[in-house]
Image (cartoon, rainbow, N blue to C red; front, side, top):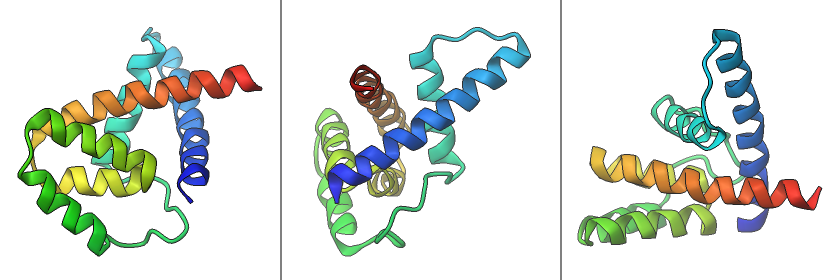
Length: 129
């Protein structure tokens, strides 16, 4: 499930990124692709626009336990755990866990680092094509 979800998320992010770049061009705004991807991830998280993936309809018990464990860890460790969750359980679950922490600083760092990781995946996916 995890790899299939990641592939779906990468495809969805690619589509959102293209739409964002087009909107920026129409406004005459120039932004680096990586920065545009960060904006896409932040907007998706804050507006709950993440794609509904098969089998993920609610915040499950595992994610709730993860939130409790994450609350007890250091900031950097929390962000690292959230990134790992995004790649093991999917971005939707990781975003739900990050939002449940109700810590804007962690959420912002998580968005930035997640965007960096997915940007790497996008670049890899483009090389394979």
